[in-house]
Amino acid sequence: MTEITIGGRRVGPAHKPFIIAEMSGNHNQSLERALALVDAAAATGVDALKLQTYTADTITMDTGFAIDEEGRSLWEGKNLYQLYQEAHTPWEWHAELFARARQHGMLAFSTPFDETAVDFLESLDVPAYKIASFENAHWPLLRKVAATGKPVIISTGAATLAEIDEAVRVLRAAGCRELVLLKCTSTYPATPENTNLRTIPVLAETFNCPIGLSDHTMGIGASVAAVALGACVIEKHFTLLRSEGGVDSAFSMEPQELKMLVEETERAQLALGTVQLCIQAAEEKSRMYKRSIYVAKPIAAGEAFTTDNLKIIRPGDGLWPRHWETVLGRKAVKDLKPGTPLTWNSL
Image 1 (cartoon, rainbow, N blue to C red):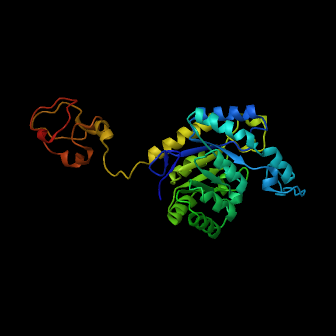
Image 2 (image 1 turned 90 degrees about the horizontal axis):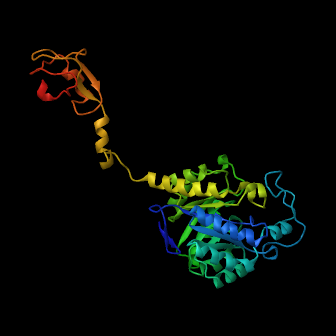
Image 3 (image 1 turned 135 degrees about the horizontal axis):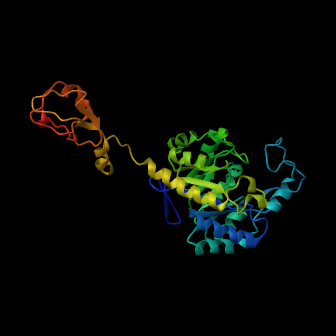
């Protein structure tokens, strides 16, 4: 299963990277802003828009639990329930946002965080499902999503190899036939040092499915490098303007950066090509710009070739420099003018 299809688009090593723009809570509870985000994402050329489908009540309880990550999180000290109230995308917006994406020819789907969200998204006929890192051990949710028969993209953040294997087995046993694993570091933002992209080919070999990157680092460097290591899918959070704030804005890409991500990851995938140990057809004409042996001063018939009357210069239509020692000391069979490429017929 090295290739899958999402909404009619092939995803795999032989195809350009499948780029997902994650809106998350960067709409700041404004439908107008959410629609502007859809428009902006489409203009960058991404393949898909992704939402998150939950409410504060479907993801946690209002128990007063506060996030405590010793300064490592953007949400340090916030009440978890209140955070999700602030960050959630109202369910009544989904249909309009998905329709707007389709108008642009862009795919749109979501991350469900409980079984009721799956039922809701099925009513909107989403083409695929994304499982978040913090839900990759939620077996009832995995089984519910797999039973739809649609492609599943699952992030592997904060999971051991054994837990990833369990999740894959649960999904496949419940009917998932098209699966993508995303290497993910579940810190917000992530650093290049804790991204560990060399995991990507190991995951591909271990699970025999397309692998991607859920990238929480700043910039596009990690994503481009991931494609070079075989990533077929890249997911990035995006916003209109980081300075306008939002729950994920600090590590989200602005539209011009997202456009650059699309362009540079596709360029990276094209540049991978195949193993090439010979001269390409496109290079044939360029061989003329290699050096060769030329006559540098007038040489009379019978005169010996020396380092004084020969020179190694461009272009490459004379004898190649590897014959230099062979030519020196040999004699000319005819008069030669400066600027004449030396050939075997001249000796």
